[in-house]
Image (cartoon, rainbow, N blue to C red):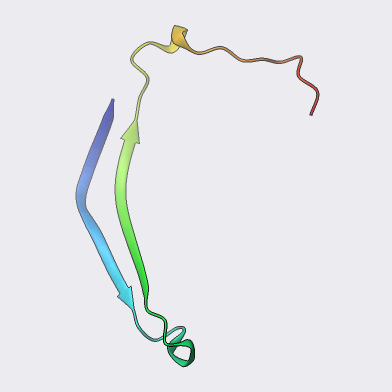
Length: 49
C-alpha cells in the first residue's frame, strides 16, 4: 500500500549549471509505504558479499 501526502512538487533550477546551458528539474512527493503481507518476504542472512 502506498499513501500519498500533499501534492507533487516540481521545481525548476535554471541557475546552477547556467554556463553549461543546463536546466535542472526536480520532482518531490511525500509518500508512506506499508506491506500488506510481510510473510511474502524473506531475508537471506548467510550470503557472502
